Length: 312
Image (tube, rainbow, N blue to C red; front, side, top):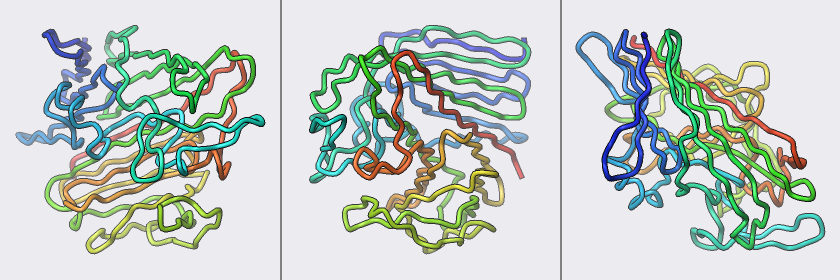
């Protein structure tokens, strides 16, 4: 078969490799966090890893809080004001992890998933990971099941779909996202970023949305990132929500479906990688309700994005 899926043996956490044997492209996924740790592509004699990841699953366990690289954001994304919100007439406060005054990046960034299925054929390699959140955090006492399906296909295309369902007595609030850091090699200052948006969410001093939007069309035609600082959310144009990151050697295209209307961009101080985060709703939307979802008992909600890489 042209594709191959394997689970690496060893005494540490499980590691899944999805590989296209025709061209050497490979994706590396950890059971820890169900996160994408590497996306390696080849052009001639050159191999490049597009993901700024960890050295091993053990390294991820130890350092996931340092930047939350590739973390799954669930059931809320980015910051939640003082960890609190009101839902269905009750007040809740998240217990898990705070940065300063605010809860950050959800509850499942360090969950260890079970690998429920993996395989390959002539068209793809895939793996499905599942986790049952039991409602143990008093700030989110709503058990739910999350299923994450990674699939590598021809033309260096990697797709991830997240499906969420539950059996609580009533609807639960939910927001979904990912927090990958991408690198093209060298400095962010030499990369170009393009995505289809002309609206930025206005933030306050704590990087929480105010509810207002700011006109920002800098990225619609593509812009060199030299000197640009970003830690912002953008409302994507619904018709063509593609995001393109490129330099002279590589082009990464990110294709979210309509389930991810928000694009969060963050450039860390070292400027060697960039976080491009697909989000189903805005930061703090348990309070501001910007694209907040409620999922009914027995309902399934699926969130999908794809990454395609090409050499230039």
